[in-house]
Amino acid sequence: MTRITALTTLQMILLGGMLLHAESRSWRSANGNQSFRAEFISSDGSSVLLRKPNRKTVTVALNNLHSSDRDWVRQYLKRNQARAEARITGDCFDTLTYGDGRAVVETKLRGSPVVSKTLDGELVGRTGLNGIYHTSVAGEEYRLFFEWSDDNELREVTLRGKSAASVEYAKGLRQQWQGLVSSLRSSHGSPVQATGYPPPEELTGGKLLGSHLWHTENGHSILLCTGQEKGEYLVAVRFAANKIPPNVLLEVPAEKTEEASRGRKQSAPAGL
Image 1 (cartoon, rainbow, N blue to C red):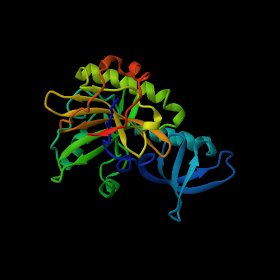
Image 2 (image 1 turned 135 degrees about the vertical axis):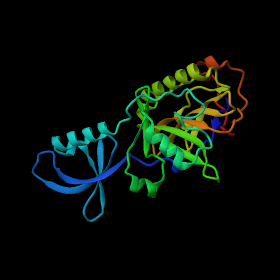
Image 3 (image 1 turned 90 degrees about the vertical axis):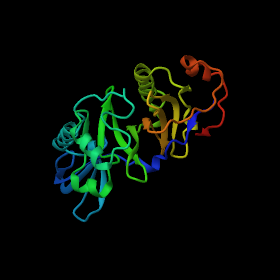
């Protein structure tokens, strides 16, 4: 079975943990006997990235911090959660339109009830928009990444889910992927191409591997993808302005591709 491959390199979009506004404060050890001052840079929910006064950064597990510091981090993350659930029902994400300029995109994102920004304006100017905004779909958090034309017009938006360890690929991430299949089918009908849940050995090279492709009424594309980077896995949804042609699939009904693929030998991925 041929899959949709080489959608975009994860090296271009992976930024590690959730980026947040740097804030200097005092931190204490779990037993409260030691303290130090550092800037809070980011957190993935299980550890924090801190910058010391000498500008060196350190990663500290939340369990090694005092309970008051852990509460502070949880409250900070809670304040930066997306305010409402996003829906993946249109040609592009939320109110964004292909061809929008960067300023228009940022204005729309700032005004959206389903999007939150996790970095201050000064740092956004230095890093661009990728990974700065996040949203929630069906209870799962996704960060937004963008691709632009040579004229700085929007041509792609990718919702990248949280990375998870390999043990979660066959469990939680599979359920997340199945939920997105159901949501996208409900909104956009049957895909023009569909394969089963990719085995982990197919996810190599830091690329997103597409399993499902939809064409919208206006000639755009939506792809459901999985990916792997540095031993961790993720699920992503890619909105693209162009009409991506499907690869040739074996004669397997779209509704039964996942079950049927278990008994078939997978062919080598082919690029679009």
